[in-house]
Length: 394
Ligand code: NAD
Ligand code: MG
Image (cartoon, rainbow, N blue to C red):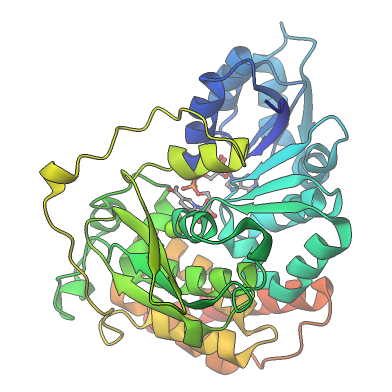
């Protein structure tokens, strides 16, 4: 048994809490070096009292001040703030494993810090990889970091591949990746109905309980678009070799097809503690608190092709990946801005893809030669998306 010391980026989120639930079950195996959160100091303070990390980080100094006050009777827990604090705990020598579970572009810098420090990086934050693609994978290769996918589909694909051929599917005899999608809460809605849906409806996913942003992404199918790009980078393949299958039961988490006609699948109850436990303990297997799969009660599996007319985000993501360079970063930034506007009631659900498409049309694609170029395009795209939203609402 390998004992692991963990930095958990995004401890108060859906993935963060599921990670801590797995950690809690195995005190002999895991210790917590650092916990981080955005603004919820009270919630992080409670987690610090239970898990006793050496360091706790909040996204800004105001929240860090509040956390320090709440933990004033715990002098053994150091409180840090901001990007510097996040990157410091991600790269700290005392931690060997980093769970990257901050949502959105905000997670990029600390995730990269963990990669550059050569950690075992459990990647939940898909946006970081979508934005920086080749540069991110180059950083992994340069540092020798151990990158393990936590996104349930990618973890399933990883489990269905020979461990030494993750980056060389052709050599493994792999012909296709079958990426499954639930289809989200609006799978059966007509196009006109999509204009009326509310944030509460979008966040009520039929099978998974997740953070708000990824819930909306699942409802627009942008989540599958981001995952298509994520799969191409992680498994060194191209979109022609990845086919999205809508599978509303969310029991098959993805599949890998081999040259001899075999299709390997990973199945399980829709519970993120399975891929999290897989990444934490890999290559060992540990109990994760997940309900055993009862196929008799599920009865049937269904499969459909995704409808790109009603859900254009998947098409936009595939096009952005094909354009290459900074296009996926622009796609991601515009999506983050549009989803935030939808959640705040400033944008209709059906206009999320409109904003993304317009932003992609305005911001020219350039070669993603360095991280600076990507950050610049990310900022330009956010500005442009905000402008497009204000134009729509007049
Ligand atoms: P969430 O919103 O529940 O949690 C996000 C976490 O990030 C919180 O701890 C929050 O405090 C922190 N955070 C937010 N903004 C921050 C900032 N600016 N600086 C520092 N910290 C910040 O999100 P989630 O559902 O747990 O998803 C996290 C990531 O994992 C996302 O990238 C998502 O796409 C990915 N993911 C989630 C699931 C899931 O089931 N929830 C599945 C697959 C992948
Ligand atoms: Mg997923």
